[in-house]
Length: 446
Image (cartoon, rainbow, N blue to C red; front, side, top):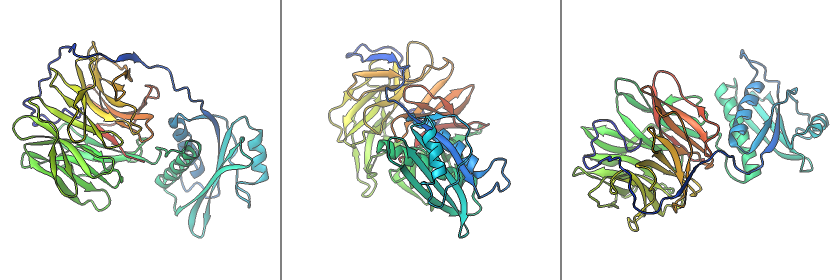
């Protein structure tokens, strides 16, 4: 969990006493099993013409794109993807308005149909794609994308992701998540830990820090061009920023006895973090431009794991000031501290949803095991998201930018991997595998 770090990081004042606290009024709690009442849009992915050819692949580029697009649309929870075989439709000289294409589209039972074509033009690959909505007069939306030849699998996937996000934006007015990425920690039994970045669906992981330098607790900057993380410098911890393009690293919070759990404000101007100079951790903020530091909590108990509200006015954090780790909120200046969680003896690793309506966190109920829960910022509603095996530990939740999904880690049998889940607890999907352990995911903004 974000409040648990390598064994060398010792929070002397953090007493994880596991007795229930009767203070305050508990929120209503229930295990949510029903899906949203939103009615999904039936959509038919007819396929993509392939004038670009197979290029040595087991499947054609069009088949690759159709498969990726289908999974992207399914994960949105907005579309009901119709599984019906169909020949890929070529586009006519008038592109999406071809009579043959529209005739078959209008004869289908789907509310929305999408199809397209991959081809070559002036030494580049061209991807033209269309969607027809029966509720509209002709074409709902159409796009054209271009890229260099030969068309790599990564490029084809990126174009499919881009089209999926375009459809989400067209029907909801909100950005999609298919082009987002996840940064996380991967390590082995020797204690080496490096940062990796992968597509939101687990494709294309690549290492971005050297395993010789311990890297923990990554978090995205709002511009998606950089990440911040905690690393060790002369047996102390500092918080640094890594530019993903230039690979330049600069120190944000210089080495002290303890600097952990960094989180960037929505505007990217402030980093909130926990720091301990006298054996006890408190929450601080630092202006990344002026380096001005401000201490927000001054309590003999341990305070850590800050997370920002979307408007940047409020922070949630973890404190054991009530006898065990619980979640609190406070204004960004440190005023108006209020306890948020009362159910259970252990609640930690909070993360505020992009919409501001929920705070997800790690919870432990009356039985053994750590689960994911979410609570409204006013504390009136509490939902247990997962109900996994007692011997597994679910940890480090992070929200998708659409507020409908979470990525998190699951530790079982001494190894940890990352999973994707819908916020209502459905659609659980494993993203990572193999010999390395994967933890501390953070989902990028749109």
